[in-house]
Image (cartoon, rainbow over all chains, first blue to last red; front, side, top):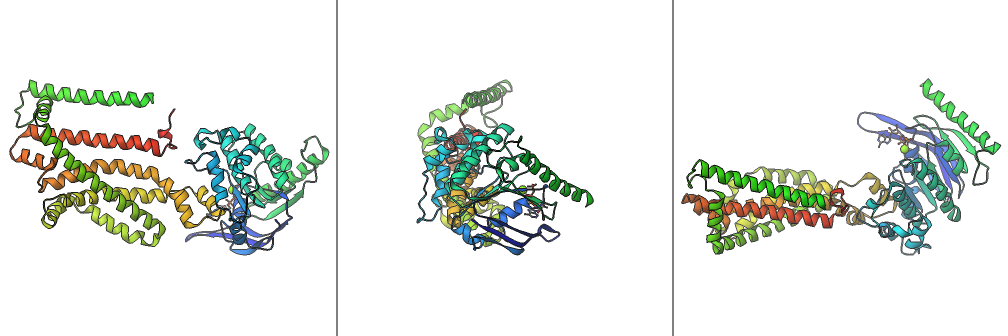
Length: 255
Length: 254
Ligand SMILES: Nc1ncnc2c1ncn2[C@@H]1O[C@H](COP(=O)(O)OP(=O)(O)OP(=O)(O)O)[C@@H](O)[C@H]1O
Ligand SMILES: [Mg+2]
């Protein structure tokens, strides 16, 4: 799914204060690209994702997804959403949790993958009948990933999906995510605070300034996966990323 | 499991110590029976009149359960209605609180005047008493859904009804059980209070007769039945709760 973002501004306003979360953002994403969004806390990354997923309406500007508006794409079940909390339904077992997501698909769209196939892909075949409270944090997030996969959407919006996990699970799941992403190749917007994760996963990194969020860096990562830190090109991009992030840090001090 | 069994024994021990202390105090200080009968005397009274107490208890229990059922259904359905039509919430809740603040002891005799000495006014009082906790709890349960889950259902393009059916309703179940555990003992009290103001049978009637005749062992026997009944209802609901809302931390089998 192509994404075109034009002059996107979002202002949170209540009776007392107005807060500009995003200020005049412009960027485009080609279909199938894996884009990491990185930037200081509070710069509007989650807001951008919520706007793209039609969980919020923009104050000004537009987001266009394959020529259509987010509400249409959401209604067409082309957008899958995943955040930091696994957001599983505790009264449903693993299989039922995945099946519930598929249940809302339009009747004319037949899922290519069955629930059991999806569970197998994330390595949860043995836990198909288990309830979420019996699963570890890593397994719960894996189940959330299975549910994301089951939707067969062409846009994945992922807001720090593994941020709450320990380092080891996180490492494993990011690797697995790549394996899951490659065959379907949806467009991905991935929010992260981890620069190595961004460099390992993404085709491209968008760097945000501190609040109000603007894009201050746009780096292409033209390296085959799996990527090695030993690669000189990797180090080059890492340095460029550090510079872009450094400029945001300076901006923060200047504020 | 082990912990639960243990806490059951602890509770039983406490009750036995309490009854033992009471028995001892009555004997040592030679308290006259028209002031405070001993537990043993109370149990003797119970054992001597099984037929009468059984009939009275059955009637009171029947009224309580009927009232509870009506109270739970109306409270629960109203909570559902207020969730689906949130514009009504302010008005209906004001009315409900007004109703709740009216002392039922004052309404009970009125209902007896209007509806007679039969079971109907008892069921009405019980329903009125149990309705409010159910309404308040279920309503807050239905609104208590995690934002992360509402986001998810929204991203699935789920309809209002689907969100209600697959998310709000199961989220509210633990709240319903909390309300039931408050309401069930209240239902017994409601029925007894209503019977006290005029009835042809039931434990409240037994108590009122015993009271006017200063026959305290009769009165205490009825109180014992009520206490045991309330306790049993509460425990039964707790057991059912662990089966139904098995995903809650304190329901899980270890
Ligand atoms: N519902 C809201 N109401 C008011 N202000 C909000 C709301 N949500 C976010 N904000 C504000 O908008 C700004 C951007 O928030 P957002 O959650 O998008 O940041 P973020 O980049 O995702 O931060 P983090 O990395 O900490 O998750 C912040 O200043 C935040 O305080
Ligand atoms: Mg965020």
